[in-house]
Amino acid sequence: MANEPQTPRNSDTYDVIVIGGGPAGYPAAIRAAQNKLSVACIDEWKNRDGTYAFGGTCLNAGCIPSKALLESSELYHRAQGEFATHGIRISEAKLDLAQMQKRRASIVRTMTQGILALFKAAGVTPLTGHGKLLAPGKVEFTASDGKKRTLSAKNVVLASGSTPIELRSAPFKAPEIVDSWGALEFDAVPKRLAVIGAGVIGLELGSVWLRLGAEVVVLEALPEFLAIADQQLAKEALKHFKKQGLDVRLGAKVTGAKVAGGTVEVTYTDAQGEQRLSVDRVVVAIGRRPYTQDLLAPATGVQLDERGFIKVDEHCRTGVEGVWAVGDCVRGPMLAHKGKEEGVMVADLIAGLYGEVNYKVIPSVIYTAPEIAWVGQTEEQVRASGRAYKTGVFPFLASGRARAMEQTAGFAKVLAAQDDDEILGVHIVGPLAGELIAEAVLAMEYSASSEDLQRTIHAHPTLSEAVHEAALAADKRAIDNINR
Ligand code: FAD
Ligand code: NAD
Image (cartoon, rainbow, N blue to C red; front, side):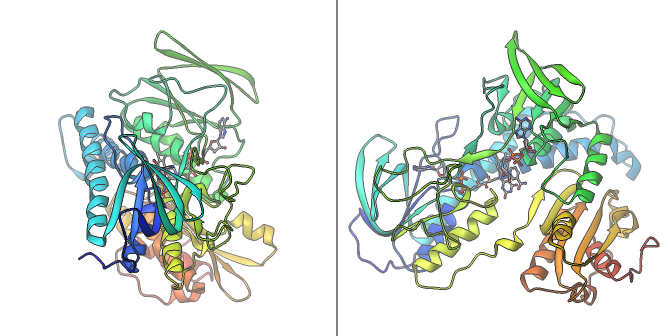
């Protein structure tokens, strides 16, 4: 049932206007409506088929379509290589990429249309078109038919998101050189694929096309693999990716990419000197930058930092009365769940309620196989902090459930303080790591000790026992692992 808005309004006046309907903006709008405020959410996302859709990058061209393809491609891969081990003989697993892509598109459509249903139920007014902050409390709305109106609201939430960074030495040139959105919509499996950037997107999309039959080379500029992750975790993950055939080349600086006759000649330098690579498609995944194009009129007072992020404090206040900013367009990790919590916090603060985001316990997940997930500090960060610590590691090889699932790669690792036993970080590489990490997030949210995890009963046989045993191993008390 729709909430009754607090302020009686004509159609152009709201309590809150949210610009951007991605995973930061749409939850802000829904929570504001739950708080009995009148809300409009403006979004201009246009899909390749010309349709407008709420949901932003995450639902249309990010989290959801990538996870749909990761799931399908993993099933295809397992059907080919693993089913026989289970005693299931299939004559041949055949790829129907058109059906796989149809399924991906259908999931996206259902999810994005779902946002409109959520808006309707909450009483949020969706406005399709461009939003621009003219001044505090004033927003210019340009509808998709080009008609302009000036809207008013006591509070404006900027949630304009981010966009892929282009590489000067390999500028986008579809269909050969594409960004992650292009790479999600390939209609044929490229024979040879180069991915520039071994970050989250590079590893996820590289895995998708590798499983579907492409030869995949990943070129990473840095000498370390997954420099942001715990390095024990990163090393374990890289070992498995290499075994799968993902050709990750570190310290590779791309100097050029020339398209000729449907082939791309990529040149790069590494420790051995100049290198060349001939491929059919290139995906550039070297990070994203905040998107604020035509979002702010010249004298709004809202400031951007040197990297183009909208400047905010820890409560997402821009410093201009009644103007807030959340999600990828502000500092912090570019993650849908981080944006969502910021959106909810802001909507609660606007309503005079309590709101807080605990930036120290934001989980990160990379949806490869094995999956990679962590929360809190890496071992390198704890070491650098100077705090004495202990570690417990439990391999999935010793987990009955992982063995039953035929997914024994990886481990769970718990880092805890030596003095008061507080959990400082949990790092998991292995099956369903992204689901397992939720327990660690909750534990850390409540400042749990490793003993708290040790004394928590975990169902048997589950993968979560690996987290339990890793906590026990931090005190050399693991039961199910001889290498404790
Ligand atoms: P966005 O999702 O970018 O939404 C911003 C919206 O605002 C867009 O619809 C845009 O059109 C609209 N907009 C911008 N300016 C205006 C304007 N002036 N007027 C009207 N509308 C405007 N994160 C995860 O947590 N998990 C994942 O698994 C994951 N996978 C990803 C996979 C890929 C391939 C990519 C590219 C990203 C992935 N991400 C993932 C990151 C995630 O998509 C972003 O962190 C998230 O979408 C950010 O949300 P946001 O609302 O801040 O911005
Ligand atoms: P990223 O920051 O994760 O990785 C970019 C990688 O490219 C880094 O390893 C970087 O060292 C490398 N790089 C930078 N410049 C390079 C160059 N010139 N040549 C070669 N390598 C270069 O960025 P991304 O993978 O593009 O993802 C963008 C954002 O989207 C990330 O912030 C990420 O958090 C988010 N995302 C999240 C998920 C998830 O949560 N599962 C999935 C996809 C994307």
